[in-house]
Image: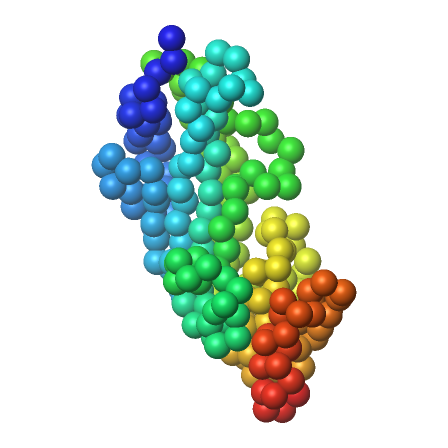
Length: 212
């Protein structure tokens, strides 16, 4: 018999209460019955959300597939992006985060699977090890606006560089008064058949910005 989602959440909260020491050591805080860790560091607000799928049909005998996400918000970058991409990025996104993605993207680690509601120490260790090796180093690399450009320029594979990210990267260059670099990002990414019409207002913005 499947467990109710509310009961599963209670188990996951207990599991992560055993890991709170690690997140607190790194400046993150979590509400007692919540599954979101938050910290303000440098020029960012960073969140770790413990997303989970209860009683997943794609796994037999599994109570929950735990699928954490990171969320990083650079307010200045997002504010600039609103000047030219407000119609392209959902409003609740542009007001809340610059980057949001699963922590295990591009990694070869196995899924975090909760199989027992009482004995889950091995899973705790798996999750902690992953955060120590992969997630926290990435978050620590992204605490200032300039870090975001550094990560982009190094073609860091830990980030999903989708269309939204390219809009934000262009915004970050604008904030650095690097208008030519910003325009080049837009030109390389969106000057393609099928995309030019969708992004015409973005092109117009950069074609008229000073000093290009």
